[in-house]
Length: 67
Image (cartoon, rainbow, N blue to C red):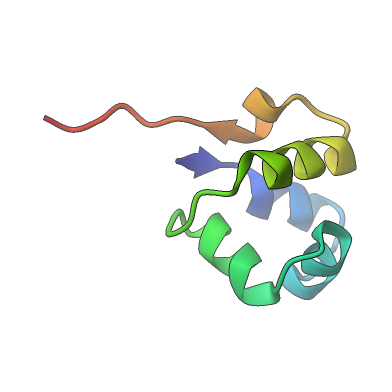
């Protein structure tokens, strides 16, 4: 899943640790989500959307399945 978390975080001069605290997760979780190695749960995606005052679809985009 593609996401804009790293860009949104950088625009606010937040560290991964800052974002992790705001979302109630570990810094490692934020790192994994930003790198596309971990897809957030729906509640976590909603929490990020509320934090950035955006729709979930503006932050997270599904990637088409490869055949």
